[in-house]
Image 1 (cartoon, one colour):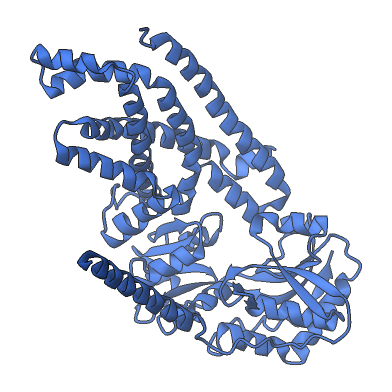
Image 2 (tube, one colour; image 1 turned 45 degrees about the vertical axis):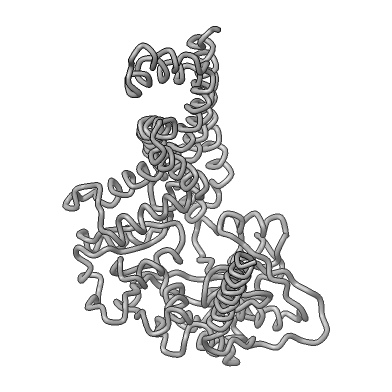
Length: 284
Length: 226
């Protein structure tokens, strides 16, 4: 009998501990800035499928059944301008983006998708809707303030990106560290075991603005490259120009700025010379 | 096709995959043999250590092991496996950490393959060896292990093939092996995507198919006929 009582006690303790943990997880997840959708969709109209990232905080993130991020908001605004009443978000991982557009799985892809010559051979683009640039993310109290200050420092980036190679041209003495996801870099940076992380400033700002990293990171060194984020479309898509016009409208009516502030933080200093993009065009 | 080879360093990546396979195979053969010996030892605590090792590492995902090699060993504990003044420090260090992770993981499979080899040996042989006065070490070295390896050739070969394909996990800590080529092509040159997957797939078949044939033949040749 005594045995049984002990077991019951242990089980109860374990259960309450488990509940406590889940409760904590829930509250930290819902923290952060207001994530209301910026644009309202019209009441009547067709549905459109849009490819976004599901794992890029601040840009395209699936949180339960909600989608948040700058890319997500831009997608909603553009869809609204085009007359769609509902947006179905579909995950578009990097290896599948071109195939998804070519096969018509999605109509558009808004997923930190830079316009490059090689990609233009496969798909069309409307944009840019944002001009990102490579930058550095360091911890709040770090003394690093430029690329030159990276001598002997561990700099994290992901396999396949050219970011670290670009930096090495400026500062050959840095120690590159590559992982396969930006989250791994952010985690290592938060624990203080690496000194900096580098990629597009939008992605960096997205991590800096995440609730668990709030006030731990800062962006330094300005931006030193140009990544023109475009909305990916099927090659030769007939309404490419309309999409470009919709981007222009989104910028002009202030929704662009709202989407940016809501998702990447109002203290995020983007390249204000090239942003907001003045003339989004169609390159199909 | 040619730009795939010239721009994305497929040969370098292939060489990294091959080296990763060879070093990890040797490492896990050595470590696996030690663990198998522990599991068969007459001393209870050693058996417990061997069994725990296998149960812990065999049941941990390889990605997690490889990632913790970089995160825990290198980044948290500051253990480096290369000369830090070497200009290629990051690459060499990452590669060696990946070898450590692959070795630790596959040693458990080698251990279990060897144990299956042990089980082909009639118990009477170990008893006979002890009764003529051989110690545990001598019994293992002279009687059990030589036969166990011969009986375990085919399961060891399976482990080697699995290990070859598992090297693709090393990309998680930035080792430039074959799957890193795919990641790079994906990011920079979507036009070559299908071709690169095809090429890398064919390379893996070329690596593993002869392994399977050779192992089958070797297994037949060295089998202990009873």
